[in-house]
Length: 265
Length: 265
Image (cartoon, rainbow over all chains, first blue to last red; front, top):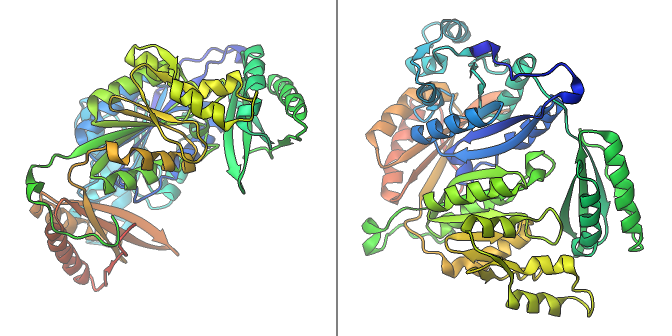
């Protein structure tokens, strides 16, 4: 399959499925708390723009068996799987061999990747360590890295990306044309200067009356005052607007004024 | 690790186990990219201070079946499981009932939680929605919430915490005495103004020569220049120091000067 993996899609937009993705963050440095992950939120928003919902994230250590297990469980469960991290030149970069093991295929030096990297380094400096970055599981195709040359790769529905955010982001642009999305989830949100527990009863009733709308409630504390953000999500803007108006009316019954948050990018 | 870390180990150190934890972040708002999680890195560092290693994180939607599956798989696989999110008063706060379902026990209004919350609200304002926050699976014990009263709970090796970082952090202080750690992982790191792929060969050899030391290599790009952080981790400070000196010597062979990063908090 490699390049040509496409989740089945009906023609009719109304019947477009919800397309779901998982992200596997490979990295001891995230689990130790040393590095804060910056890829989850970026990927989530980027995927939503493509009509793909990020539906699960797993953060796992640099350990071959763990990578194999999680890649295999996710690639069967989700339409797309993205991994970040572990594709550099050092001994702790074990993602490529782990993915090969997950798919039970050999790991090869990819000729195109070898050529790209060899051309990138000064003569004689394409060392053994750097050649590690050209290793791709059999059946995999390269993912362009416009930032620092060393490519990622795709095998079936698994996209293996760099962990450095700038590189990860550039690789996403390289694969945009390979992804087939479904309906994008639309959303709007309100800031409400009322404690969450006061509005909870109304929100529950409104949520029950609008089964096709997801209503999320996220409390905040600001300068010692409790309030909440209400996030309304649906596949249809008209459904969102209807629910929003009911929530606004409920907030006003508390004598408070809800504020529509600026639309997110 | 505090400033006052003393590198000597207790006598029984060699027999202390490595204790591992998983974190399950429950929240559509994290998966949509709307909210950036702030609990992972905090919990990772806090647990390390208790001699517990955060070994896996899963971010999952507000969905009962998913919560049940992940809680059940993690509580068998890890010494401790922490969940964050979904214990507030609104309709989308489904963690308590989902945990009850995972343990196949009924969900009750916990009398002590009812009393705490009833005392907290003005007379007549302890509404049905607010009473949701007193629901605890049978067999669970309360986790104090010094910030906003509504408690978390513990059932067996699963600790159910709030998602709001300030509250989550205060709940951790409430359970510190309940956790039994093993050996804390010690670490030190170097900033190296050399491209990662140049140092990769040396790092691989040093890693091979020090099997009890984890050597992680994390590239960065700063003002257009490539460098890397090398993070060295081990259960014993002497092992770390020995590996660090070899890495520093390797860096100097490139005519560059490594900088030891300040010890992290």
